[in-house]
Image (cartoon, rainbow over all chains, first blue to last red; front, side, top):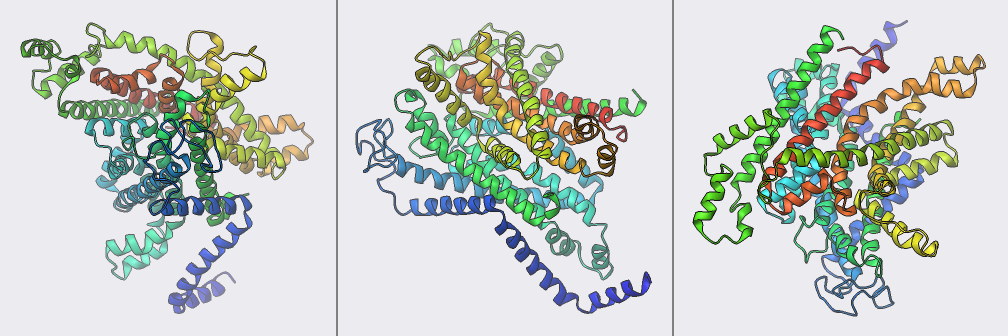
Length: 305
Length: 314
């Protein structure tokens, strides 16, 4: 009883393998989306993230007032109809600057998530797949790197090089942020490489590169995407943090972290200057994390209950 | 302490030493690549005086020699001398500041662990009720908020909010030295790790309370408190303990900002100040110190681990 049906199933899988695989991979994402839709918090979060992205894109073409123009109205003015979010200590329109800040946050978040994911995925795949001395070296780097407070490393890199343009900050954050991704991918690869489909691929003479990127990587994609999603908010925090200390993108740029710090001196009589960018930052990060949680629960329903 | 444990601990100490070596040498090389030096800001009157200063700090020697001298000093517990305030030895300075930071950090950790685990247990035992949803959402918020935002909101609340509300009776005095001044910064520092712990406690409690032995405990009519605390929590704690290492790291990095905002004279504030003052001897010292501290915290967690779960041995 045990052998006959499973043999039959095996044969059927073998015959229909091409079609079957394509069909399943589509339904996995459809399934994910269906589960995600049922999660109201994740849905609101997704909508909010899309809204921030939209604002970031719009800010590149249009803002109510020029982002850098000082004295468009009285300094420290609280919200009015003309300036819905008020004016800051130099009489700049906070709404316009908030929109520009959204662009910087999103660029840093998405840029870092992409760059550090690439580093982490490649190193994780190599370490998990080849094991031996390659794994020893990469794992040692991971372990050493893991024992260093990453934020302070980023501060050090920025201070030592003295470079503060956006691309460089993305690189600086990525240098520290890849570690968790590498750990995750290494673990996934270690278990996936022992699976039958990898053995099957190897037995028909598939090259290592193909096995890594066409067999192992797609099977680890779910957790990788979730991890990459979480990288976005953590990179945004890093950038805001750098800017808050005055080490981020140089001052006239409207980074949310820098805006929060600028209003700090006038906290007692004009709290809106600090409060608005701080809340924008907080809300965006909450939404990004809630989106990541929703995606994780939807991709891996076992985590939920 | 078995031989395996001993070997494991020894191995970890090697890793910690290696980390400190790597960190310090990278920072060392990086710092000395910089154009100019800490004395540039002092508006030197003569090149002769500058040469004297460079000689005083050994900065005129070749880089490898400087580094070896520094490592030699560290092995004797001497981190060198401040570049900005001449004559100030760094080791006693850092030890003094460590006491301040440790006080703040321990209060933050206490707040974190007690409240975080409490919320996690509450959310898990009341799963899918509004308490669970509120705690989970609160967790996401706490987890997402950068600590300088939390700190700013707390300052706004305590300094202006409570002050106006209590008609001037309540006055939050930002600074350090009085016992009540530790509360607000500790909360600001502990909120993020608290959220992580509550999420993790909830998740691992949910896993444990579905196990057969817990069902047996309920079935034989054990009191709820005993089932939760003795049967479930003990096993649910294991994954929570693993996160305490990374949480120590986050408390350390968090303290950098919190101390800067609240004007607390600890290690974190020193780190930021010495970066701005280009006092690189202190920067290297604090950085290496942090790397060792994180390594020791992770090691301590790994040693507690087998005590909770006898299946794990090194």
